Length: 307
Length: 284
Image 1 (cartoon, rainbow over the protein chains, first blue to last red):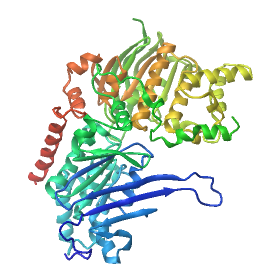
Image 2: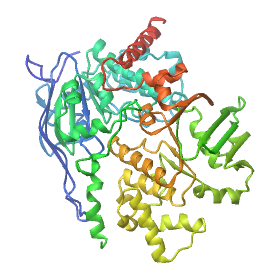
Image 3: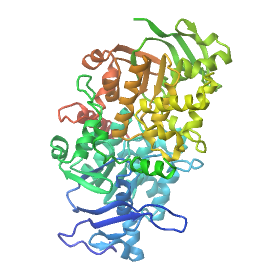
Image 4: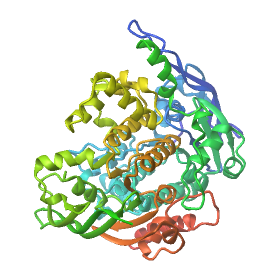
């Protein structure tokens, strides 16, 4: 298949986010919104190879999902550029945009919300194959779908022909991973892919995600609030707090020798599975950088209400 | 130690076309006064069904078909509906994962908390209520001024703390906390759990913490019971269960927990999962 996105000369990164800033609020006749900078001057580069797993870690309001939406081209940056193979994704031609849509895929937190409960799960698998003309016949479509399901450890006969509610959460999420595989993507953005499933299912999903990298050479952006799985599966960790990268580096550097108080707070907040390792006192009162933006509004709201 | 809650041979069934599903299948569990018990298991293990059974809030067609639930020696299953209504909140209170969404969005926190007190016969003067609410909110680390806010003006962690304040308002003997922090971020989770820990200590309530995170259990519980498919597999003191888990399933739960160590079993478990994935393809 020819590649309508500008060829990728040696040294051109696969993806580059350059000084990307996203600002919300502040507008509208009925709005008394403050301006919220969801993402502030974000820079990041992914090389075409080797495939890597980058974890973007932060709490609600940290900007991690905004960052994902920028990368997916779902939201336009207020300033800065998102480049794919060296070209601004907002200046793509129709064909380039189509290739980008296929090569940059997403997996979301709630694998149930993606499905239409009136359709069999086959629907989410056949649709992208048809839309992107990945197969030349129905037989080829069937074969590709079977291969993709097997690649994530699902038996086609146990999965196809069933309705979404007849699958477990783990099966639904792995079906979504199979769906992305059908499109032969270069990058997958996984936004909290395991935060809604049980621990035993979590390992199977993580195993499938790791396989994307090792076997299919697909780079992964793993967006999570769980620093522990990030530590275990990623090659690089970015810690976001209120839209700002407060720290980044190898998992060992970030976790074993955190420099920023917010990273330290995230690490100390994780309950360790050892009754002798004390959780300690909550430092949340002394450090006000928690991602909970609304907490910050609290005194202002009280004042508004006449206190 | 005195037992405050004793569950004996509890059976909760849900009828289906293929016969009853035994969501809770002969469970016995004892909770001592002031004790913090962790009840751990995965989705569908029956752990939340036990909580609902104790509150007598099992939704039909689900039904408690056998056993006893003794609260201070009184079988809750024999109480009239009205007596059970009075027992809830006053004697046994519950905080769930979605508790924060149970707050009425168009009523200020003050009225919601006062309603709870009034429904249980607490009659105070206006300033008396104000003082009581102030005490409760302060106890969970919130400013008394929160009474003037609507739920949407609070963050998830703050709402969950309002629910804990409500749960302790009548000094219950038992608090059931069913995944109270699953919807919260890790930093807020710690704040909420430490709040719960402090207030249960202050009012001397026993707590059953229901969840699936062994880390949370290690940090909160004194004793942990492991549930699977309607049964309790293991019920041990917390250090005991972490140092020497008796049931293979308990071990499995712990090994599937990621940590900040490179030499744990976690990546091995992932590799085994990857091998199982490969085996499925190879078998075709």
